[in-house]
Image 1 (cartoon, chains in turn blue, yellow):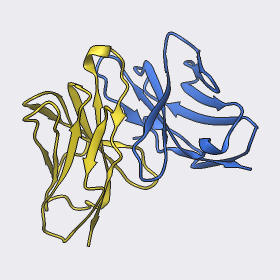
Image 2 (image 1 turned 90 degrees about the vertical axis):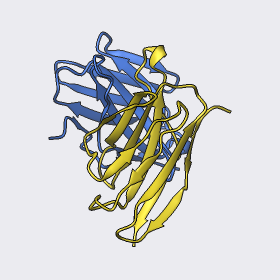
Image 3 (image 1 turned 45 degrees about the horizontal axis):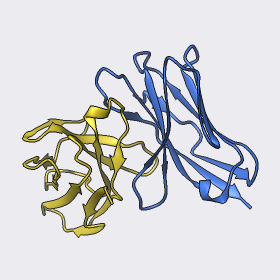
Length: 112
Length: 114
């Protein structure tokens, strides 16, 4: 039973364009969402988060949007750069227990 | 530099052998976690520890054991009872005092059973 789903295993985007990575969740108790970035043979690194009291959070080139009614969040990267090529994981938790539930990841490939 | 050190980075094991993966952190974080990553899947929680001398099973604890004798150390033993141990193992920690649910990860250990 996948509570957090990233339905696109991979995504290819031209350098300089916008990358949009999507994530859906099923558990309405989730109230905190995070995006992590992972390079091969390394651990994931935290990218950006959003709590359910907001619908948007920005940090430089990265923006996360949350649509609670649709149980959907997305990560926008503008403009996309070669160093953005990595696997991106979406994770969710209920603040009451702090346990993160992870999506399967989306591999982003930035083409020159 | 503060961070999490996992060792070894690569490990090969024969069937029937126990192996222990090391995880050390100098971030002064109270909580520590072990995850397993398999191709095409999200991270799955094996064990976690909120404080020294206490730990809890995660979603896939069978065939694994841990200890938390020191705040900075959280070793994971993959026992011979784990039926499919070949995977990438990630250790993480969290600062409980910060109130944020952000984990810091180590670089991982890849275990291959021959």
